[in-house]
Length: 466
Ligand code: NDP
Image (cartoon, rainbow, N blue to C red; front, side, top):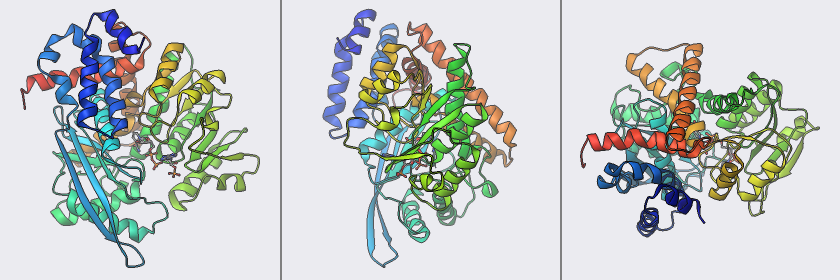
């Protein structure tokens, strides 16, 4: 019996509803498996809510919430350093603005397509609702690959991308931020072009440089937040991060600051990775080693395997994406922080994590665990924090950056970090509360989906059929 059948039988709701919604989503959005996956997880979580609240069914909230308010697709031509014209595709998915302007990152990666961005925009709606801040959901990006490109090429691409995007965004309409492949350098080029085209200096992007409207702690926020969320989950068992051994994947923005916060809270980080492979450092990645990784990735734009040239006691293992499992997840540890990309933890990886003693999983990445892996974590009752809740710290501090921009005022590092910690605490409490109210104690997946949904759904009813 599937999870859906079990839950619907328990609640008396119609199992056909989820089936019909999914059949419709697949027919209308073919070749978008990540979008189907994200929708299915949410709709399954909500069966019990729909059963208790027929008004959501009669107002067709599910059917409306899965349809983006607007999808923008555009050509991005630019010239490379050899003088050759290159053409990429740009996107912005404006998913839902019922509780605030569209908010969500831009991803530059060759794998980017409409379905991936729709899954990310859909997740963002619930995540932003959970933060308690007034932000709708959106996501965008391009199939442009910044890897191996010169700074000038990245600048020309960003300028061309913004030459179209600028007419669709604004500080009260849609406020993009960073994601995979979009960090401080890219946000700078994008902001510069927006400012020139609009002739105005406004908080239209978040993740800006500290000297021109950025918030302290924004670069750190997603990683710090994922660790705060893990600490909150551990507190429910009267435990802390002190002395915990941790597996972290990725070595970008989220992985770096996840590592930093684990060190702050007394934990030990054993692994980091990139798409080429992972490093295992039995002695732990301390602050000096982390500083090396930050310089390697953020300034020299090198590969993680260079870590073992500097620290030869560590071991580098190449990753074969076609293999049945990722060896990074097959080491003894207490906690795992997937912080690279979607579907990077499959069922076999999930089983390996459990076999190695991992009982805390806090997702820095978006949807990094496949549905059968998620089910295994839930069945085994480990502390599993889904990305929608655990990585919401990034967009939360983006929301704080918007507030500071509106006031033309900057909060201190301590002030922003305190607010972040309180928001992560509130998100954790909302998940626990929603899960408890609908008889899903300990299930942060359903808790996050339900808590995020209720606020958006009620606002959609309040605002009528639009
Ligand atoms: P970065 O671009 O800074 O880093 C991404 C890291 O993940 C790199 O180490 C990259 O390796 C690796 N990676 C990316 N794609 C793949 C892939 N297909 N296979 C293997 N490794 C891969 O991105 P972020 O750290 O910002 O984002 C990481 C995750 O966190 C994403 O899922 C993102 O959506 C999520 N997230 C980010 C937020 C933010 O504030 N930045 C907010 C909330 C969620 P390589 O360099 O080799 O590609």
